[in-house]
Length: 178
Image: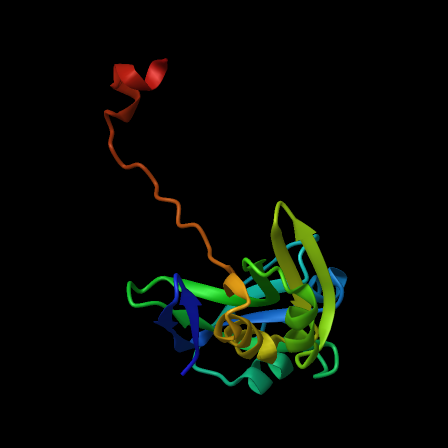
């Protein structure tokens, strides 16, 4: 199974069979899709990934065909569930912070094995975009294992669950009017 590291501890992930992430080089590619066997599809005009839930268990190739894409246009991965049941979706990005040695050349040599599309540094943390979604776990785990970084992990999309308040007296609570 897939895993990644948090605070030098391995976090095991269980692949889902009905939730997927689709990535493309351009966000516009993800805006027009066929919604045949798709229960839910969410895309954003500024993101190069979309998430979806199918009506039944599917493979990545079946998802691509169902959405009407060519395999050259998009990449698909299953989503993963954590031990607590929450679902996370990997993107083609890795976040890492260089270690004490700050050996960026050695780090770039490791990343070079995985097809880097772009590297950006902001606020002391690097964000790496890979060409292949399938490489994100291997690349982040290789960085972590190298000892050259303080941390390295895939960048995930994790939906926020919002709950509807069903308390009929909610509006009468004085502390809500300040």
